[in-house]
Length: 219
Image (cartoon, rainbow, N blue to C red; front, side, top):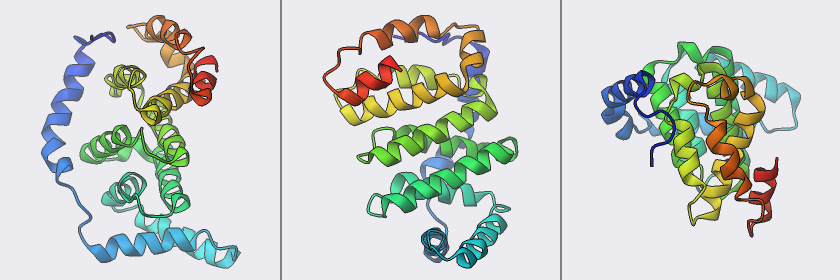
């Protein structure tokens, strides 16, 4: 059932943009295997206890940010490389989060669309750390771009709450909790009044069998 103002012009506009870049995003893969490996190497090196190495790596990562596809690589590492170390995947997402906070408005439409698409696909990742990182990234995008630029998000997260996949349910709850914390004004002032739907839904999970889900619902 559609519950978050599905006939709004914002959703129609988002769908038009999504359709215009969807084919490109669905087929996107790292252009060069060497490029992916170089970024992975930098991410691993950035975790070194050597501060000089950390500074060098940080400078290199900042220089790569001038290339639009760099942010696609980051979300690809976060969401697709399931056999990579969790710390490296999470770091990739946190760097992307910082990039989004810094200049999300400059991301090309196809990059924004791909990041959103991949975040939603990874909400139910098997790793709690990755699920939390995805939630942080989603929240950063909402904070910078606004719910009006991602009007289908809340309905998608809402629908995931009823999933039999506990990881997906927990991931969606985690994202919603962070949005409620960081974008409370947007939720309160949204024309569709999503809190009127979300709060009763949260209450239903107060007695959920999973402690983490209960914690998210009560928070």
